Length: 222
Ligand code: ATP
Image 1 (cartoon, rainbow, N blue to C red):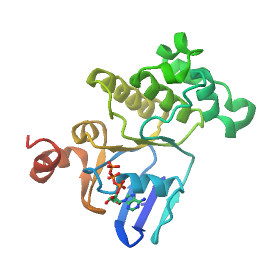
Image 2 (cartoon, rainbow, N blue to C red):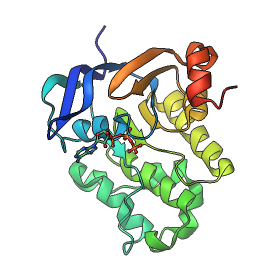
Image 3 (cartoon, rainbow, N blue to C red):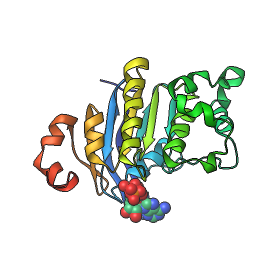
């Protein structure tokens, strides 16, 4: 079965060192998929290949539909307002792309701070802006790189709720790249476990959450 993202036999080398080794990964339309793995497993490398920043040594990536990314660390334009950051996400879609209404409908918390400098916001607010900016591209697929990094648990729960409703209400597919395996397995339908550049395990998230190998390595042994 084909998906909206199809990664086939992907190998990436950095000056000789292999960062990804024969990776296969599929995200189907409207599916929530997690990619989990420890530091240095190769998650960022896969994101960089998806955004065209790194070229693979071999293998293919096919994207069917419009893909938008929520980058690790949010990457706000700190001196620009929330509103301007959002509008930048829609620049490809011309005049219509500058309409931010649908983002403020989703994140009403951003309305009172729309004129504030993005650099002055909290991490959670910035992550909302980063997701909102990605949604301005009207994507079919959202690639979210480290949703939870540096954020308080309550804020992460709120953001996860937003991703759930985007999936349920708009049929958005999400590839969630996450160090927090518990969060990722809880949110997603399927998951891939990346270890030293290879997919060590993949399957239904509920099955992986019960897998003793996953529990020992990624869920604190519980
Ligand atoms: P993290 O969560 O720390 O970002 P990661 O799972 O995203 O980890 P990558 O950053 O993709 O892992 O790194 C995969 C491997 O490739 C690591 O061994 C890393 O040291 C190596 N690597 C990453 N970028 C480069 C580079 N530009 N040059 C050489 N080696 C690199």
